[in-house]
Amino acid sequence: GDVIVSGISDIPGDTLWEKSRYIAKDNRLRNYVLQEPRGGVFRHVNLLIKPINPDAAVAFIIMEPEDTPPMSGSNSICAATVALETGIVPITSDIMNFKMESPGGLVDVTAKCNGGKVTQIRVTNVPSFAGDIGVSLEVEGIGSLTVDTAYGGDSFVVVNSEDLGLDITPDNAKQLVEVGMSITQAANEQLKFVHPTNEGFASHFSFCMIAKPIFYDED
Image (cartoon, rainbow, N blue to C red; front, side, top):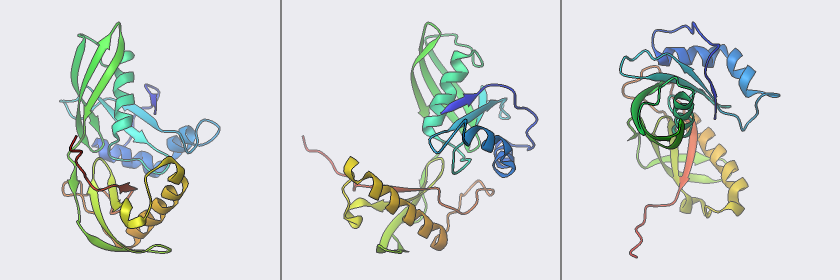
């Protein structure tokens, strides 16, 4: 994801979550950076601002083409790297440990640095949890599926790839995307998702995760 380091200030809201909701609803900044000619469906943009939580060194708001999510692992890596390499978070040692504030909460960052550059980033995400386990979902063109719901910085509906009869391979990429979109739409129509601590998180599912069952390699 790209990162905005300055030029945006005075975003309404008392919390970072409220500020992110203002950006999501206002849409002017999102449209400017995410739509053509500057953006597209491939573009993610992160906005670095001063944190509200005193434990955080920097705050960031994530803007994606379809959503302004509470947290994103890949985008947090981009934001942390830019914050360090631009000096917003000064590099004072080869191993940097600090906290960033996302709209979904604090994330812990450990970064390896060399010569003013970041060589490795590790981020500990906000708490993840399961929502509903083993619920029925009717999907047009597919039929009845048994799915789980979960949260890991954003809301997911999780389905077993074996129930779809699809192997998770590059050759099936287009079909996996189309099926995932249909499942996400059905979940938003039939299921509800509730975040236990963020009352402002609207009941919706952002993503479908098509996953193989957990297995262990005896070798």
